[in-house]
Image 1: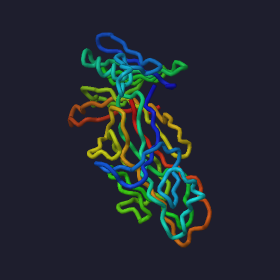
Image 2: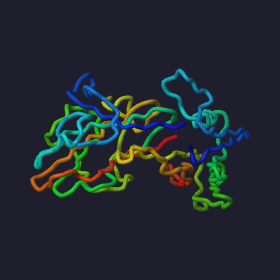
Image 3: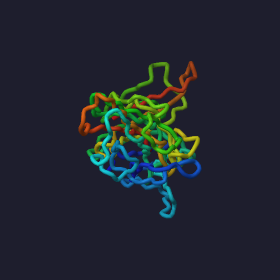
Image 4: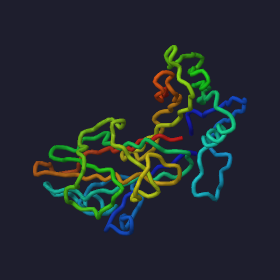
Length: 134
Length: 172
């Protein structure tokens, strides 16, 4: 169902992988609403900061970001979106799927996967977002 | 699993507090026509040239599994209504009994645009609930996405082509 599943690694080396059914570990069948497995990632950040976030395709394509260094990894290639001497601090994960539903087909579909981080600019202190869309 | 999104339509006299339609049902299309219901085929309820369709009060309901929905956008993304036809809309949390009077406070969306440039849509437990939010973290709806077709004397007889309206959102 999902083209990419996420894998999260935390500073304490704990790992969480998104299950194929996106089921939250505390899923309650009797609840009116259950969050997705992404809630597990958010919950664990209370225990240990997130270090690396990766989107892994069914064909093992890997798109990842290190919140520690700001480096992005795409299938073996590493690059930065932060400029030298302007590396953001206090990086926080950004991840979402962009979804669409239209009246013509009446089908909902995933238009894009987006991941990256937001952080504080070292000089201006402004919150800046760095996001890659695949 | 992920969120499941489905179009809904309110029809009939405004009722309740806050106001909503007398009926709310799943809508598989937007049929602009000369009666306020979801069932009459548009061929049986044509719009006379120079008049307007009834306003269509639609919304999208989100169920299923998701942690957060945000960044709602709504736009006319494909299809040309034709000569003498204007498509207007309004994103609102206020329901009023649909009418054929020109919709007050509406925006002309006759021209196709990219969904990224669409109108901002907020979320809440019900489309008519006040103080909608930019994010949704439980089962709920968009605001009402109200549309209306306005015709003129220059409008040609016959069905118009398919018009595509799109809702876009971000989801985790």
